[in-house]
Image (cartoon, rainbow, N blue to C red; front, side, top):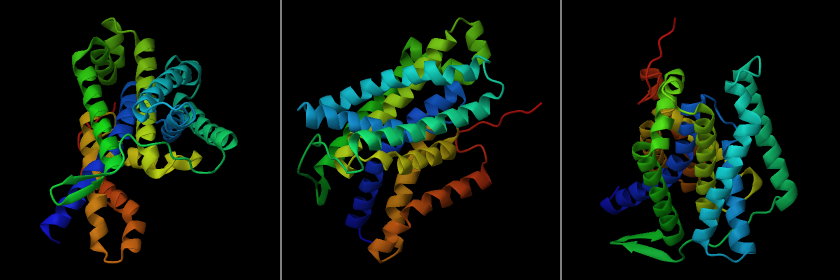
Length: 300
């Protein structure tokens, strides 16, 4: 493998890692604050793609406005879902909160997929990308739509990290994720923080769907594979860990990119691509069950 091919594979891996990181970051925030696994996360990703499609293709707005509108719409939608369906989990209104969270998010996932299929149909839609054409980076030639989408995803990721680190609400989210009871004693509004955390997680998934829609089309089942990749990333990095989600996404993207060159037949290599991440996950969990950045929990 020459230097040019290595650089091409590394760049492709970095681009796909940004989308994995954006989806997984939302999943990590939701789990860190609410301690639930959101099985409808892939459908939030799908709704973001359709929201951007409506704003760009139907209303005729610029693509970047479509991404912003999709992010805002999923933020509001996520907060409404948290208030209506998720809040009973931590308010003690259900007998088995863990089972309830699994079932309600799974049912929501099935409902959203079928609603999207009824409203938009099974046909793929492709909104206009943020940037068309090609970008030359030395001898490397990169598709402009992918590079622009990855750049926007990086901006969003950096923005989320800055909000979590330097704003009062970000500190509240980190406090609740570390110790929910202690945060409440210190005056943190648990209900509001949980609502904003779930909304932010949905918004990040929606933004990822809006950014990737012009690259791979928008369809009702488009969130299935990305949500699986997001679960792999958050478990790989450590459940609820934001740095772990970012590092896990980077590892998964690079592994998938470079593993495709192990098999000379391109079609076969792409067919096996999704399996390599699972192999890495199994190896990491065998060596470090709590994930790369996870912490062992003491059991009484």
